[in-house]
Length: 136
Image (cartoon, rainbow, N blue to C red):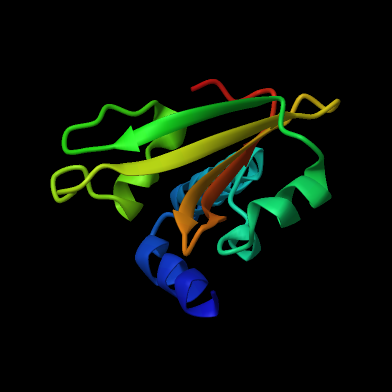
């Protein structure tokens, strides 16, 4: 991080100190905006690989459940788009059944968890939690 700030100081130094300060302030403001936006959407990598039973024990029964059939050319919603990284839609040769479970919390947050059957057990392959302020 210090290298990054050093680069900013090197890049923005010039003969006009006011212009330098304004440039640096605008870059720092952009960094703060992007950092704040990232808190509205989160992936918990620790959940990936755990069983459906463990998820239900943690969050209770899901409010809704969907089945997605990952096939070549499947069309997904924006919040599901990371599934393309797990099952590249141009490389999938067999249909993969993925279950999507949803929870809605009092805070307005939503949680979606995607599971795939492996060795007779449904395990988490991806998850996404987002605040009520996020619109997909």
